[in-house]
Image 1 (cartoon, rainbow, N blue to C red):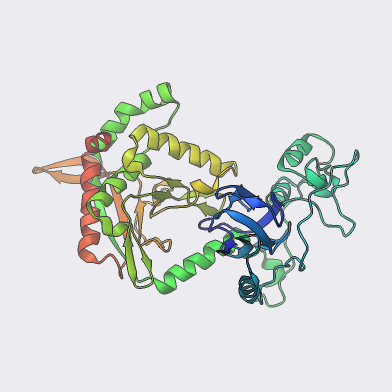
Image 2: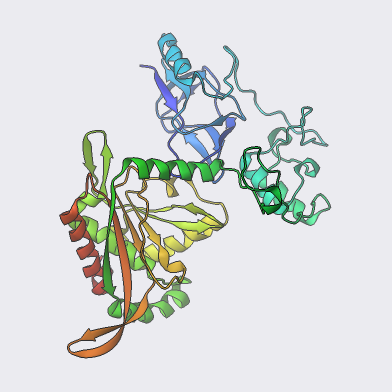
Length: 423
């Protein structure tokens, strides 16, 4: 039976999905899991595998098409099967979308072999480069019209841009200048420092957060964690982690492990809401918010309950490096069931606030900085390190009692960190 193949959902804040290359043509046999096409986003380059086995009957988009996740891109079925109803369904779905489709009967053309002197700019002035390459060039102040492309069809690759930094094709980056004031701006032009377009990754994040705030009834509780034993354990382990494994041990892996164990105790916080169903998931996959510049990425630690503290630490360090170098892969950005954000990276003197839930998840935890605090202990005044944890829940799913129990369990594991080493 013929089926519609859709662009996979690539995770929060993925934007600017464009098709680089189709690996098959109409009429080709494809196996389930076989790569169908190569796509480029503003964060990653990836191959999209076929969800079905059969004959690729129809494409809907060619190369350079800018798409969104979930959009239909092809039909796979039997060679002689009538697919007219599916084609009509897709065309009806795509009505009103500003995405150029292939003309009936046409197919994406294979990229031509580069000439000896490739020209990276088409006759219409369009630079042959993916959105990611264009963004890298903008950030580095490189004029792509002066860069020779070595990719298929003279396409400019990321390597071409990076290599051009050491040759005269580089144009020095101009100083920050005021941009033209939009017609409807109420701010006088002389008062404007910069205008940042609300598009791409920034718009995807904004739309997701607006949807979360408008549709999810948030509530937040907090817990103060005595970190005396966790600080002592970290101090005991950190030199060995660094010298033997080249890993810098922070407090984040402790919190990730505690979240996974607490989910095992209170599974309801590890749910997603699907229509009128609460789907409770067996294992926690912890999305850890990582900042780059002024944007936020959420790579995922899969099943940390099955990993050692060292493994979680190593994976967190690798993901942070990948974020900074724009090397995140699809499987590292998808599949989170609960999210952790770290307010402790800045010293505000206070760790209060409400995080916004990443739908369809129902919980987000914010960890604060470990701070010394004066506290009474058995009638004595002592100074001990404390961390504040903030738990924000979707009240439709996680009500007061399970939310408090989850917070209590996380506090228990962090105050008894030896338990985190036992798994």
